[in-house]
Image 1 (cartoon, rainbow, N blue to C red):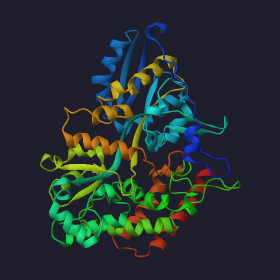
Image 2: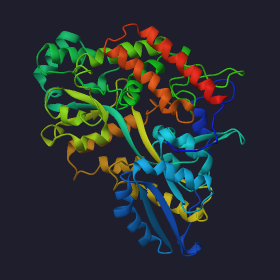
Image 3: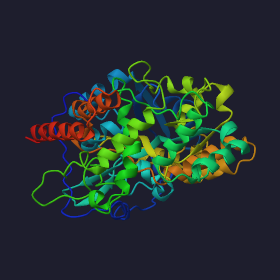
Image 4: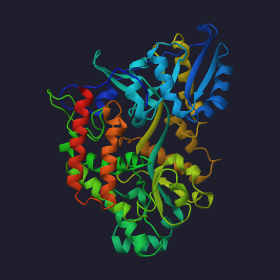
Length: 470
């Protein structure tokens, strides 16, 4: 978390229903390409934390860019993750122009937005960018100008989707046996709800085909609940218009843990976690976890999920698509992807923004244009360009399963709305801890009343929000 930022950014959305389509359409962009000949020789500085895509920039993008635009040199500066946000905070507060382009995450978006310039007219082809992920931290509602602004360009995004073992799911005998028992297809692409996932869990475990059902992260101490629970919760949110107000992506900036509308005398929308949406999601999440190891004995985490999946003890997992590289090859060679039940995904994006103190704005915009172009994105392991995805999908020199993974990721990314908000204090760890601890106590049977759990979480959250705003 950025240390010492005094400015508190509270996004107050206009009264009434604000739909995702409205704010997407309200962003006006123009394509104003910048030529190298119009720029004087200069150096731009990009800063990010180590491992945050730095290798891709350093080894691939920067050499290509400097060859294409010899007037511009790119200086890449990295900090360890633990030091990064404090260092950038110090530079921002000092009004320093030492960094032109800065990296930020979904969870730190609201802290970076005040220091970034709008990119609406940067010349980037926004229609080619994965919009679900871009909206989850790259777009800011400017109350002064009463419009949405692109202030961060999507740099990379994993997607939390469904991974399944094709050795099991493509087995015709298992397919028929499953259909005879449950009367729907074993093909995960056809599943429309989480009840069907639980039925499949029951099938694989009760028939002793696998030791566990589908793996889903459940550790509170490692913050895994922060991303696994929203993936389940979103299905119930999307299908309850009383709560979402007809805005299936939630109010921009606030996300899906809140009602999709707010009254004129409210400082923030009403929290929805203790509605039927949150209760049903919590009960479903617990049932999913009942088919995997006891979280008190062996919690499933971001770090150990690939190895456990590699032990052939599960038919699949809910995981970030980028984790496939960590799954042992004896199993990964059989893993295919599909969207989450009902055809959606959860985004895990990072962004690059241009500092408002930069003295090289045009050159920085040119670098972002170049970086997000399909020709460059096709070289990335996590493309942000739809055209780049399609180029990879049609590249027959790649293994069929790899191309199918790209296709599944692209389809899922078009509805990647299972985000919990970026421009609100809910991203402060102490607030999310209320939810993590409450959920963990429920899934480990320390508390058995889902309604009481969520009521308690909501009250603590309201108290903290009011204190924060005050």
